[in-house]
Length: 488
Image (tube, rainbow, N blue to C red; front, side):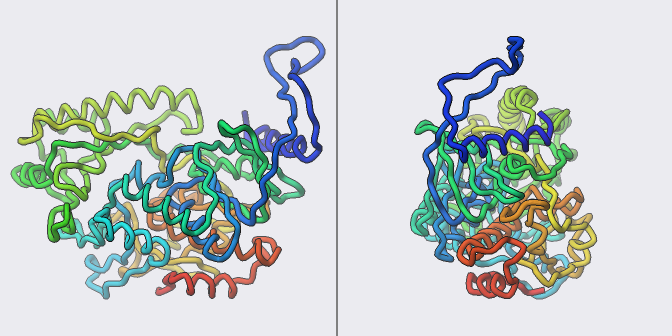
């Protein structure tokens, strides 16, 4: 199905709901009896009404929903899994980065992302679910800080915060269509074990990572397929101290951070190694399975993430290609554990304790928005007259860094889906420039975008205005009240 057909189908779904048509059964696509297609019968669907609908309870979506609810909006959050978290809990190694790159440039240390993202870290710290903002000891040209989280505690804490904010959280629920009228979304179609429903709202945030809502609504997009997919494994019966010793014995340590681990401060919580310096069998084996030698932990005997990467021949929106990849990634995980058991002393009884329920992506659909952030915007530390946050991390550092250890801004218009009113795209769906995307897609940047989009969506719903009609001064005031930092 191409992009136009995808959009047309979503509009037809909406028309069927709005027109209230009913049918008792389907029929072949034409009178000649062609059974290569099936015409799905329209149904009368029950309707729920909200001010804001957020699609996807991942990295940006959780923050967007909380932000909208804290503005007083009636919010629905739709998530296909049974819990929130997204890439934070399944695809990363740590949260990068709440701070500017102060160590590399020997400038003032500044926390540049605060607000709801920091509220989440504070809650986690209260139950021992994070290392805190752990300072990098080695690899400071990559990042100055590393914030690792307990993935299971993150799911719990964010779920509790959503409930406390009054968000209607629809987990185990699929987004399957959009109701579009004259370039504006009126509602979405959901499906769960309770059946199909129409959910109407005034403002919408697409935090699906795949751009599902935007695509259903008929947005223009491309599918660059410019990143590998990944499934990360949690590994138990291990020791990050023993891994550090092993890497150190081969002069292979490239990153090191110390923070709180199992209740004790100044412990190793992140380490990365250069496999090229390790025995040939390990180096070659890791390369064959796309295994990254970087991990973080909050616990003494557990690695939160060991990444296994795989480059797909097509976009990760292709179901059949992804099915093949899901099996291959799990095979790679098993081979990775074998490598640790064979080569790293003390890892003889290591085993996989956690995997993601499905592979994770770094980009699927690239949604066309009103402004496209360029790599020069990022590197030169450019700021805008409509920005919703600032950020100072680049995942390709030290090759690329934000100038002078400063920050750049994410403009509001970079989240406005082109050609559609009242729809915001967040996180890994924006920015066509691959290198710029190496910054904007990162977890903490996505969280900050979520607060900006959720706040704006609530204000638009409350003022009954379009996303392009919202006065920036009102949005800025609300974000400042939400403890969002705008320091250059």
